[in-house]
Length: 329
Image (cartoon, rainbow, N blue to C red; front, top):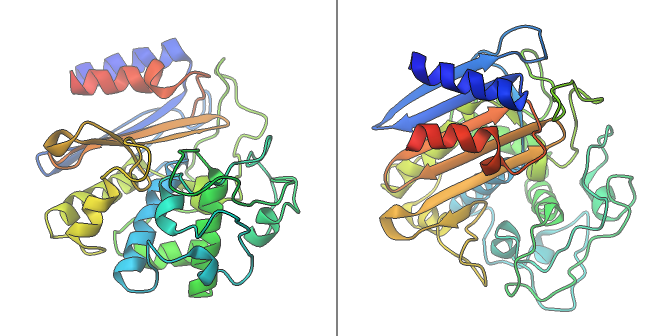
């Protein structure tokens, strides 16, 4: 392990990334590594230090939705328009369902310059209506559903509105009750508290907004630790063996199966390979942060790598990719 941590530390210096958290699951055992500083030249990253998960939020959101479906509170195949109360989805192309939105195939496109860092906490209906600087265009379906893959934060914002309208509670409260608490994810939140990391630029300097805020909890608002995120993966693995506590084996298989027109699109995850060699992944990339979850769920293996640096290049071409290759080759 010492040789591994030395190699990762050297890579962090090369890429000018101050802090890194890592969780590894293999042979029913979880191990963790915490390296570097939460803020350049200040403090030490520990297993409890929060990182911004960014779009790995979508992985957690999907597991919440599957749990609510398992409880009979939602359905993957029910038109979302029938569940929405605070906002209305306009579509001239037929019904949009949760399955479409979770696989980025609902015909929803993000307007230009939308869904970035935004300091406020507007209602989701305001965001979807285009009434905030976070998104100044009303969201609507612009393509037929289930025909084209278009990565969409807006689609997950609609998912969030469905949850809030059906459960009549804020999304953050719903996911805490139905997902985080049952899985013991005590360090997962949408309002980060100490100890937490600060975001850093590609040159290693701390970013202007050291603790960026994305008011789109379901899409990109999650702060967490590698250990907490690994609890999600372990529950998915248990569910695939029929031993999960949140949803059924059949629902777990749906999550890691292709949907619609994209063979790489599962529900809340991206897919590679097939059968027992199926690999799933979820990537997080925002201002000052990059993370990645990769798993071979049918083989019972998984890796979660979280950093407080934005290298400016895709995860697999930078520090995270190099660390992943160290772990798997």
